[in-house]
Structures are given as C-alpha cells and as structure tokens.
Length: 241
Image (cartoon, rainbow, N blue to C red; front, side, top):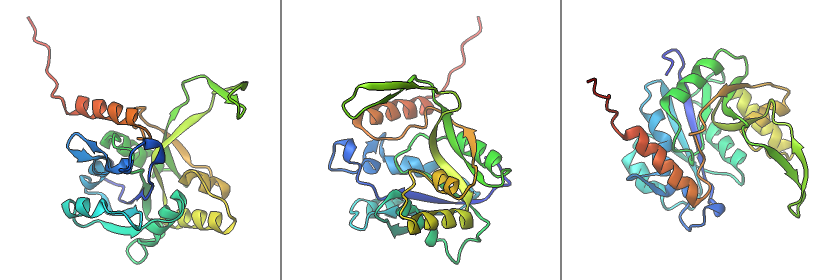
C-alpha cells in the first residue's frame, strides 16, 4: 500500500441480507474460521496508514459484540434506514477526530476478498485525483435489458460500463456533503460515488479484481472460500531437473 496516503475506514454492516437465505446476516457467516466481516476488515486493520475504523451495525445487532471483543479499538455506531444512511452515521462518528480533507474509504462488510494490493492501487490512484475514486471491473458479460415479465427488450452496449466495487475513496467533507444533500432531496444513492455524481463530480474508476466479490447468496460464500483458500495455500516452485 502507498505509504503516503493515510485514511479512515467506514464499514456499513447494518444490512440483514435477505437474499442470503439465512437468519444469520451474511456478514457474520463463517468463512475459514472467521466471520465474513472479519475477513473484510483484516487488510485495513493490518495497514499502519489506516487512522481508525468505524463499523456501522444494526441497532439490534447481537452478533457484533463478540467480534468487537476480538478486535478492540474499533468505533461502533448504529446504522440508518438505508446503506447511505448508515455511511452518513459512520462519517458523523469521525467528527472531532478527522479533518474535512482527510480521505475516507467505505468498504462493504460483505466483501471478504479485497486484497491489500487492490487497496494500495486505489490509494495510489484516487489520492492523485481531485474527487477520489472507486474500485471497479469492466463489464465483461453481454448485458440485456428486460421487462418485468422477463422478456428481453434489448442488448445493452457494454463499452465503457464498469461494475462498481468497494472500497470507494473520497474526502470526508465532500462525501458528507454529498450524502446529506441526497438525504435532503429524498434521493437514495446505491453507492457513495453516485452521491458525488449528483453533485456534478466525476470520481475516478480504478481497475480492481473480479475476485473482490460481494456475498449475496450461499453460492458466493463457496466462491469466496475457494478464493481465500487459494491465497493462503503456500506456493511451491517447480523443481528444476
């Protein structure tokens, strides 16, 4: 990771993950001996340039306290009615600790496979941009637009289209302004970059990895497990005859 860039982390984790198909929220599902959220936090907690971490959980969350006991020093606040509301609450928790020009990374609790290399690429590229940026991957599949009954309307041109990932990196003051403006106007952004776009800003797209998947269903947990296992497997050099 870039030694020149220091930042704060806000991790929204207040969702219940209805598509996951389990009473246990997806961020607390077990994955190679840890919860998903612990994997998601790990590269940031290991980075000396991370100034502090705010984890935003549901008010009635009964799973987080056990994890917090294993990870002391994290700030915990209650979430809002939406993801953007939870991020706003996380940003407000930085008041008095962070400057408006400080960088903030927002990373999904359900993305356990983000790598230190990816985070470093984002820090390096976005810190040189006036707005900030997001990790993303180019759209590779053929995209279809369909009606509500499932019938295809048209094929969407994928040139220039990207799938947004996290982390997303912006200045604390500008991101707070963008999210509060969205709240005042009754708009709910699907990610932080969209809120900045509504202010007329143009965040940078930083190529990330397709392995930085988001857990939404049980199949994703299997894929994430395989990816993490492959990273932990020791590499052996082929013997030279």
